[in-house]
Image (tube, rainbow, N blue to C red; front, side):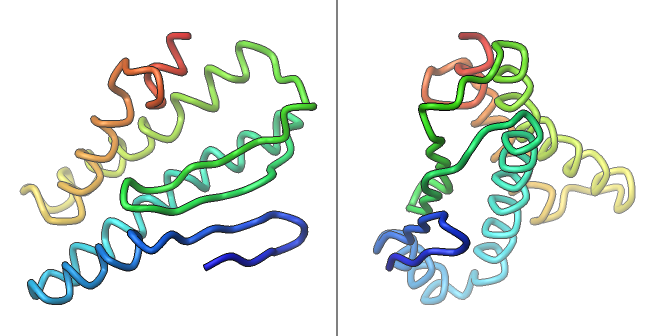
Length: 135
C-alpha cells in the first residue's frame, strides 16, 4: 500500500501485514502492537533529527523488518549529525526498556520489544544504525 502525506511517500509492504496476521492467529496481537509502537518511536526519533539537521525525506517504508527512511540525496548532512541521527533511535529504545524495567521491576513485553529493537539496531552491521554510526 502506497500513499503520500505532505510530499513524503509512504510504503507499507505486504510482509508488514503478513506479520500482523501471524501474530493475530497466534493470539499475540498485543506484542505486535508493542512492536509497531516501538518501531514508530524509533523511526520518529530518526525523522526528528533528520529534519532538525536540515535533511529532507523522500520515502518512509515499513516491512517485515520494521521501518526504513530514504532521504533526499541532494541534501548533505555533516558526519557528526549523521552519527547522531544513526545512534539516537536505538539508544531511545534502550532507554524505554530501562525506564519500563525501573518502573515495573520486571521485564515486560513492552520492555522486551524495546530492548530487542534497540540491541539489534545498535549492532555494528552496516545496514543497521550501529554500523552507520561507526561509518
